[in-house]
Amino acid sequence: MQGSFPEVWAELMAAESVVLTTHINPDGDALGSMLALYLALQNQGKKVRMWLDGDLPEMYAFLPARIDISHPPLTVSSADLMVVLDAGDAERTGISFSKFQGKVMNIDHHLSNSGFADVILVDETVAATGILVLRLLEIAEVLITPAIATCLFTAVATDCGFFRYANTDEATFEAAARLVRYGAEPHKISEAIQKMPLTKIVALSRVLASLELFGQGKVAAIMVPDDIPATAVEDTEGFIDYPRNIAGVEVAILFKPAGGPGQVKLSMRSRNLNVSVLAQSFGGGGHARAAGCTLDGTMDEVKNRAIPQVIRAIREAGL
Ligand code: AMP
Ligand code: MN
Ligand code: MN
Image (spheres, rainbow, N blue to C red):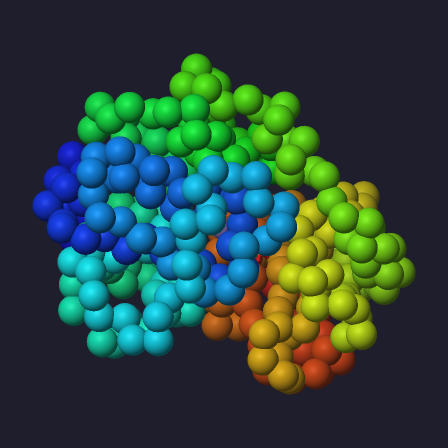
């Protein structure tokens, strides 16, 4: 059921115990939305927990309340309500829902959303899940503290490339303006996110050295080599912006070793092409201009399979 904001809030208030979760390899929107809702529910006196499959990326260590995030237990059965934020399908959380007895709520903005939850607050027209959480808290008339505003500003700003991507619209700026009014400090958030360890710059230089162009320069691919340290493989946030910014490039792809052996994760960014459709055809998903998937095979096998399909999609779209 697609719920209205008051209905969704009423569901949250009716639950005795709530678990919040988000997608694996979480980004700023995933973490910011989850932490903001966590802080708001805690302020309402709710029994609330946060589960994250995997570790919190170091670049988001500045976010308030992040130390309260725990790993999901092996058997997921307790809690009246599970809220899945910023994920378009249940598998993206890495949690097995098969034994979960309670209701599942989904707050999300992915074009590829599968409608898997019992209570749905999905709007693919907003730039970030954080905007939906902000509206929810405003409609519920709960106090939005500077800590909540910091989480939500991080959510909104990171998902629209700090107000530069095609999903940046009037509502995005309006949400940002309200969050500043509630106490978010954009320059501090931007500084915290941009700061990186030296190892990341060293990794970036190696990844950029792998740059290749295909399809008359319309496809740019970069690759994270297998022998790079695990922490550097995890934190490649922002790397794809370099191939994406090359003049004439329609689709940029980052290939990197995924969790399991013999698996490769693809990140795609486009100027015009709907890469969400392409990612879905590979078993993944995402947004029109930012999508991803994980494929089985070696790096070379996956590249050889994916790149011709991307070139074909660009040609079929007349781009
Ligand atoms: P990324 O390339 O990981 O930054 O992801 C870009 C967008 O695609 C984000 O909105 C992700 O949530 C989504 N996405 C990435 N990988 C997958 C996947 N395997 N399945 C579904 N959506 C994905
Ligand atoms: Mn996300
Ligand atoms: Mn998002």
